[in-house]
Length: 611
Image (cartoon, rainbow, N blue to C red; front, side, top):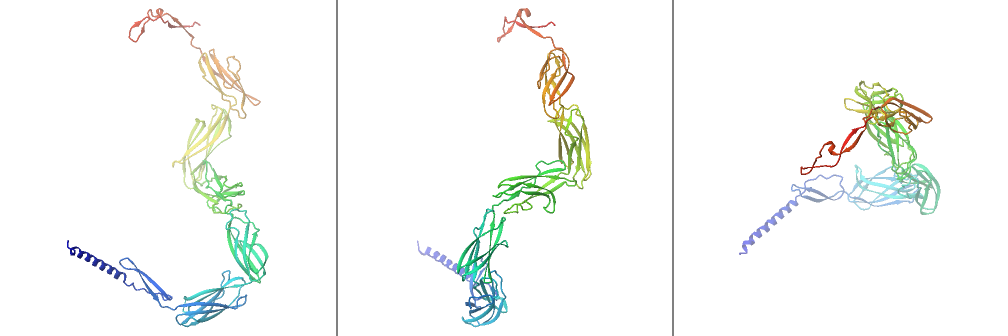
């Protein structure tokens, strides 16, 4: 193969790569777009970053030929200074251009307060040895490091600063270099706190020390300081509540005072009372609701006894429903407070109930932002209450049920269907239904009378149910007791002789219990003293049964005339066996093959007994 046949294409490809590279280099060397420079730029080298249509990033450096000013040296004359002295500073300034500058200077005290600003207009030459002098009066009552701050600015534009700096110098014989506590955090709300002061004395001197906790002096003492640095530990004899506390130290000597401050968290693991949202464990149909609020101590230390409040609405501006005592709680324990909420007419609908634990801040807590909890509770549009004259009735005594229906809505009329029942277990002794229409905020009383003559003694529940067209249902209940100190039942009460009857005691005394029974079955049989006896009546007849019970020292008698009826029984029947031939003549028995064979087994014959 000829070499030239493949060499020419290769050379053409190389030329194309060179042209493409040159094109890209030319594109990358494109000049940046014009940019307006700020007149406040100082002397130096800057870079413009930009992107052209190709989207690739580009940059271009450039120099700014602006005046350059530097303070190369600042020397304070006449150290050390005392209050009333004049601070004199000599500045050596270098400048690239002849300039007129405004020299501003002021003093900064250790606590951050500034003195008056002193200003002067100065001319600078294009040299490194411009000498400027400034003087400032030292008027201070503080000991410690003071700062002289200066700026060289454009007189026409104070914001254009050519140079700035500061120089620090000490004032006073005793200085407070540092203040801290022995711990960064105190979890125990009973832990002691010790303050550590780092002091410097230029010479031996006495210093008055005052420690302030949260701005209140708690320690006042005098220290004899030797020359040099000394560390002093001072216990704080002060009671503290959980929370962040500020600690300030003031050291005074020779008429000057040095001050330092710090802060620390105290009692971070102390008691923490947190209420749960209020709730109604068993909603009532009546005009009172029982609201429960559980309060937990989520801290690591015990909480003293305090109270919890329940508000309808915002605490302080809403309606205070009650305040209950919370006993002392150990860590991780809880207490439950119960409130009786009296419901008034017009109170139907939504309510916001808010619980506030420890409203008077009796408990020392690290965090009190979780001492409230709220819940939305909606009251039904109506209320229902049921009453009776008393709780116990003698059997046969009439019972009157009084139903109180209240429309809790302020503007709406309620049409109600009210059903009252008297129940013994799952059985209904009585039932009655009425319909009423109640105007807004109206109350209506409904009376129902029942006779209890046929009721047995025991515990009954009177239930009143009602609904409105919207489907809202309420149930009010009241327990009553029917007492009968001597009563019984029997099963069966009639049948042919001999009749076996089981008697069951139904005696329910008003007080106490039945201790003895005497049964007279009315057939001249002996009296039986069993609880639930069984008796057999052998002769036909109608019998009166009498039960006498003993309750404490009292006896009660219940006689039921003509209670048991015994009918004449069928004559007894006897069974005899005769030979089969006497009854049939021949006996036949079916076999599996369908054949017949004689059978010798006798057949039974029933013969009525002659009376």
